[in-house]
Length: 167
Figure 1 (cartoon, rainbow, N blue to C red):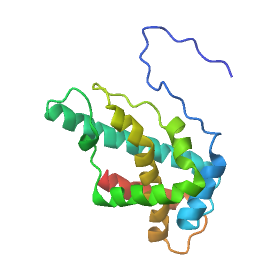
Figure 2 (figure 1 turned 30 degrees about the vertical axis):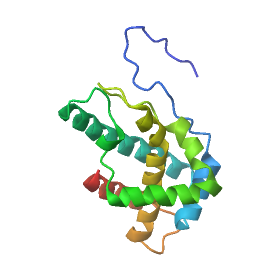
Figure 3 (figure 1 turned 180 degrees about the vertical axis):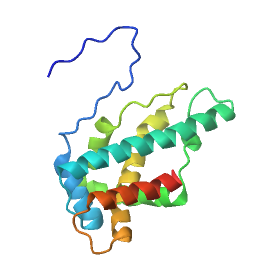
Figure 4 (figure 1 turned 120 degrees about the vertical axis):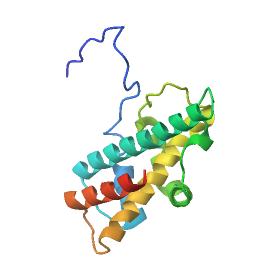
């Protein structure tokens, strides 16, 4: 595939490209372990889009919080991590020791666009925050339909709608 030559004056929107091929097996294993789900390649695309959008949403709010508090950088306390997400992050940590998804998320999370820089702590914690979101969305399928084994497009849409209500 031919890459278009970038003008040095063009903004860089995503300096770290998704490694979508990398991690397919870990993502499949993660969904199987976290919620007993079998997902396919299209589901993995949906999953990456979900993580991308929700991390962006969290960091968007965090940026505004940091600005409102007069900070020069976004700090971890600016990210709106509710109790449920914190619990999902802890569940993800426990589960991920066998799966290895956090390593994949480190390279998969795109560089967020922001007027403020992110603290080193925020950058270090983003993969596990994305992991917590991953755990939560996997479990949400069992809430939507406890009998589901292969989430359909409609179930993905319902899960996204639920998260859009919260984040």
